[in-house]
Length: 380
Image (tube, rainbow, N blue to C red; front, top):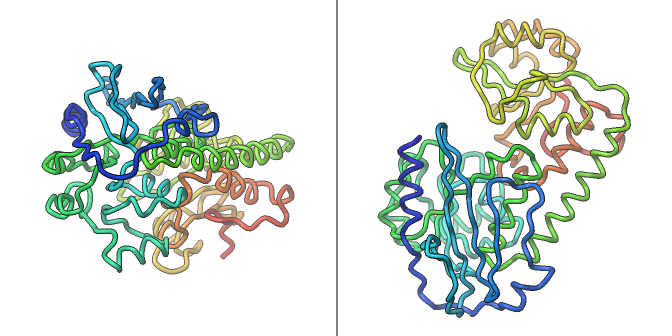
């Protein structure tokens, strides 16, 4: 992982090509109140404006031993910048025309901003549900460059991207994409400790695509709806306990007590187990440890990609001990099938829907007419 991070940041030392083609940016619009990017929840990137409309973006990439900062200057197309600090050697003309997002959390922002015309290739995305993306792939408008660890650099070069968006710390393979010779921008939304912080990363895509106003307006609606649901759940006196995950290949992956999921569940009126855990990400555990902690928990959150209809029988078939959990016995499993729900291409930007899904499952009396989008209580 450290090697992949180093390579990704080293690529960041290479200036963008900038062909000078395409429509000039509207600097007055960039500097307008409705387009100005201000961050309230995202912690892993920041934005500073220069008078000529250049935006200096710092992206924080935290490794196991150190934190690095990726410096990016977004230069309005048609502007000759003069006061960019020397350490912002990575410069990209915006709005971009051709991009390769290598993760679904990035693709989700292009979908929501109606900016798919600027997406020229994607990685091989499993469980893709979006009809428009599928149509563009079938028409040859969006190419596939393989998957992390096995990128096809020839295809990536053929689409002539302005930038590549990458998620560091996964399987990597980004060293191969250096051959493309364009900026590789780290996209670390998934490292944000809150769901709203993750969703706010769409504002970075808004700046890249020239759709800042749309990004601000969309996020504001999501934020307001999230707060409405949060306030609704805060009125309940009952706060059931809930745990998450499954045993897979002898290991139980646990999302920490300071993760985005834990915060979502607390905002939905639940007590997340492990209750006092300080991890912001995930960590490995085992069945025995989870059972000792969560045997009597009220609810159990499960997410997987199950072929067909998932059920309590299927959950027990995965591990015969699963029926020992009280949440299993009470039929209180809250389930999301990522193979059919479109979760990865929608949910990163809809924390309001995620929150409402959990409230509906945990406190159905609060949202009697609401229809869940991703998570539903497993009944059979």
